[in-house]
Image 1: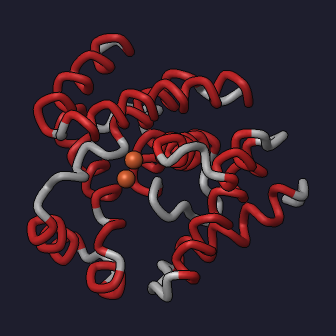
Image 2 (image 1 turned 90 degrees about the vertical axis):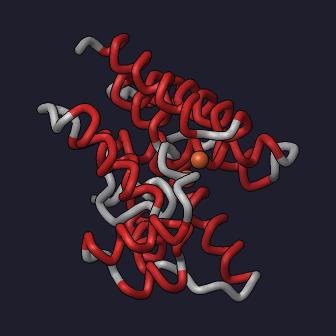
Length: 197
Ligand SMILES: [Fe+2]
Ligand SMILES: [Fe+2]
């Protein structure tokens, strides 16, 4: 299947499985991820497909997402305290069912699975989706200062750091439980944004 064929298949799937607002969000994240990839020298086609697909499982009923996560052996605290994270790993699973696991898809699957919390050591395709998703949501609420900060970053790692910082601050400000991957992601990007390995 060529890139364009997969792109079309994904768009058809999203149109069938998502609300109009979530569908538009997905198209925009795909477009933004590709734009960021071009700007920062990341594999553009992978970034676009991952951006399009990232929320493919977002509207699966929560009980179904949690039942799947328990069966897949995901962390019990995540299932209980941060179930809004589960649609990422579930979407990565659905991708494999639909398209199989082609060589080179690892970066896409990682991006889809980690798009909500990020992760320590996350790759560049994953970073483009992590940032694009945040920018698109920030745009909807009238370009928040956090989204502006991320949009003006000089490197992809710096943009990702601003996103992790904003997500962490938001959760803490509301007294919410914080998924460990977000903390690890924050620390990882903190050092990468300073050019450390
Ligand atoms: Fe999402
Ligand atoms: Fe999203």
